[in-house]
Each structure stands twice: as structure tokens, then as C-alpha cells.
Length: 275
Length: 81
Length: 131
Image (cartoon, rainbow over all chains, first blue to last red; front, side):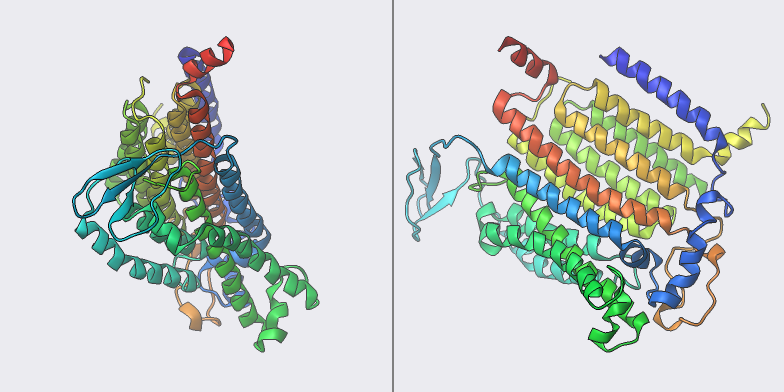
């Protein structure tokens, strides 16, 4: 298999090198990629939408259809992870471990028996390490600031690098940080499984709903200048606000998908213990 | 910018990519993949693609490495290959 | 031969992306472990993104954010001053879809592990053939 792989790789590489002779040179302003549509976008983006970041206005306004279906793909991937891992055919009896806090004695209970929540016993994972005060306190102090920064990235995507995707991933990463530094159960208390699973399609629905609202107000689907009558601004500023609404929908969908995939992978679907 | 930075980062990119495929410990492969992701993010920000570099930094060097480590944690860690 | 050297140096970004793509392709075909195959798939993806981003570079141009900010609606914008933003837009989509695909691939690997108790391809095939 390795020799076949090597031969295929070398032949494909040779074809690509031969084809690269026709490509334009590095950083040529007259290359075909930079001459057909992109001068129009660069010169007219500020006039049409008053958003300084060309990438954000292209992503959410000129190519808004692409982004809507991309959000749908991300939601579908989270759904597939959930279906693959969460629903398993067999019900095996679980063993749970409890630790007496004062003396440090570990109690193992088989076949799904549980101790009701009390002050003396705490539930621990299979691979248990002693709780580290520095990591726990440090992460607890940092997580609100990480979330604030993520909200800034979403809101300021108009004038600086950023936007819905980056902010959504950072928001999801803050909850994953909580799950890693403390316990998966602590993160599940903060953001329950149902809330995560319901918010994901809500994000997609915000995106599609904005487009439908523009359709109902008389213009094309995802033509944000129709929002001028609802928001009482001129059409150019309405496009800028439409981009912001759509980015919020994208951010919510991406955040919940990251949390959902992490929960399913790190607990292999059982949701009782994590990393 | 300078071609020296370009050359250094391109060499390191190829080294980390080959390294993450050759190590026998899957956790090491996951961490080297995170380093490869971060070096690609630097390469793109040198080329001026700041949005793409931001996304790759948060997605590739952040969340993607965590997914790999979680999956390696749930399966076996050593490999013969 | 003498005019080949400037040609080679002028297109060095293509050689790098071809190298990375071939590394990823070889890993996907020839490696035995499933997690290494998934790593190879991601190396392939980032090599393609590198190719697209590198064709958007212009000499002497700056990042694709308008220099005037919000107040500069009436200033003239020249397309030669800014980088080409179209490949960046396409690649933003590609990166995030790539991480979603990574999640699905790892979920499949976990399922295979819980069924066959191994992640090596030859052992899985031997177990299937024995059934």
C-alpha cells in the first residue's frame, strides 16, 4: 500500500508541477483572479454598504447565500456527531465513583447505583487528579473576559478583522475551557444539553429569518435594503445593520456547534465524564 | 515582507507537517498538528489575509486541537505506525 | 537554464503548496492509523487554503480594510491599493466547514473504536474478514 501511495503521490505531484508553469507570477496585480470582479467589490463596498471591512461585506452581503448554507452545513455536522455518538443501542450498567471529601476514601458503586447529592461525597471521574486551585481559579477569572472579547469581535467585525465566525468560535472555546479546567458536569450545569441543542438551529433560523423578512417586505431574499422601512434608516445603513444581524445568527450557530461536538466527543456520548 | 521570514516559516511548516505524521504517540501528533496550524496562521498573516489568519488561529490552533486530544483520550494513545 | 531560475523563484508559493498537498495525500492513502489519516486530510485542506490565499496577494497592497474607516464614504477607493478580498471570503467558509468535517470524522473514529477495539486499519480488516 505504501508503494502504491508513493507512486500515486509522485505522479500527481508531477502533473501539478507541470501545470504550475502556466500560473501567473507571485503578487501580480494583473493576474486573472484580481481583475474581473474584485475591483468592483473593493471600489463599491463603502458606497453600497458603508462597511469598511471588505471581507465582511462580501461574506454577509454580496455572497450572503453562500454563508447561509455554510451555517446550515455546520449545524448539520453538529447534528451528525450527536446522532452518531449519543444514541447507542445497548444500555450498559455504569459504575460510578464517589470520594469522601474529608478522608479521601473512594467508593465505587456498580450497576448504576447512585448516592444522592450531599456535602460529604463528591462524584469523580475514572481518571481522577487532585483539584488544582490555581487552574480552577485562573480559568474562572478569565472566562468572562474571554466571552466579552468574543462579543467585541462579533460586533466590531465591520471595521476590524473579525466577524461572526471568529467570535462564535471564541465563545464556544470559553465553555470548553470551563469543561476542561473543572468537570464536564460543571459545564453541563452552566449550559445544559437541551439549551445547546435548541440554540443551534435558532442561529440558522436568525439568518434565514432575516432573509425571509426582506422577502416579505417586498425585495429579494437577503436584500438588506428592504429593512430600511423597519429600522427607519436609509437603505445603505440598513444594509450595514442587516449584516450585523446575520453575523449574530452565525455566531450563535457556530458557538453551539463547537460546544455540542466537544461534549459528544469527549464523553463518547455518555455525558457522565469528560476529559 | 522579508524573504527570510517566509523561508523560515515555510521550512518549519513542512517540518511540523511531516513530524505530526511520523510520531508514534497520537497525543504528540495532535499537539504537532496544533503547532502546524499556528504556523500556517502566521504565514497567512504575513501574506496579508488577516481575517483568514484570525479564523485559523481560533479554529485550528484552538478548538481543533482540543477535538483531537479528546478523541485520542477516548481511544488508544499508542500506535505502531 | 538561466531563465528557469527566476521562474522557479518567482513562483515559490506553488512549490510549497504542492509539497504540502502531496504530504497530505500520501498520509491519507498509506498510513495505517485512522487518526493519522484524519491529520493528513487536514494538512491537505490547509494546503489548498494556502494556495487560494496566495493568489490574492498584490505587490505593494495593504490589508482589505478600507483605510478611512466609517467616515470615509466619499473618498475614492483604488482597487490596486488593497489586496484581493474574494479568496479570503471563500477560504473563511472552507476553514469552518473543515473543522465541522473534523468533528464528524473523529465521531466516526470513536464509533469504530467502540465496535472493533482498535484503530489500525489492517487489524480492522482482519476482524471483518474473519466474521
